[in-house]
Image 1 (cartoon, rainbow, N blue to C red):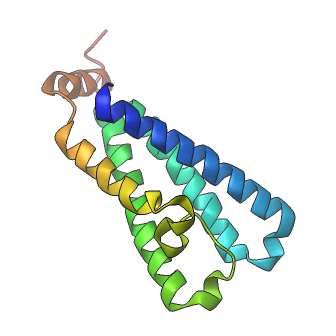
Image 2 (image 1 turned 60 degrees about the vertical axis):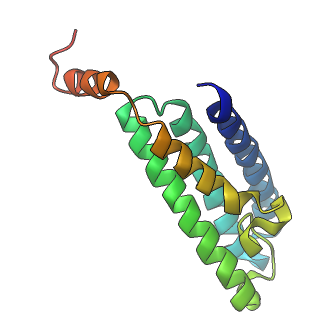
Length: 142
């Protein structure tokens, strides 16, 4: 992985670390104050971790599909939580990673899945990788 792909993985890894740290502190300190918001922060952390690992392995068909699922889930999460945090602020009195479309993270959570999806569309696994994946799954490859 080179160029934009490498930068994308690094940004996802940083977001994974940030979201994991934030959710850990929120849950450890005051989970009872905002269980929905803090659970969403933990879910965001898991999504960023899975997306990071999937992007690293996205040259293989299985990981490529996992990357698609993780990044689409992330995009839906950012849009739903971001919208709800603006239209129903009582639900999100405590911030999550995706509140206000990631405003606390300089809107990176809003734009990151767009870049991730663009990258996946333009960097599909090669036909050889798909063939190798099919051969190894049916047991015909040694």
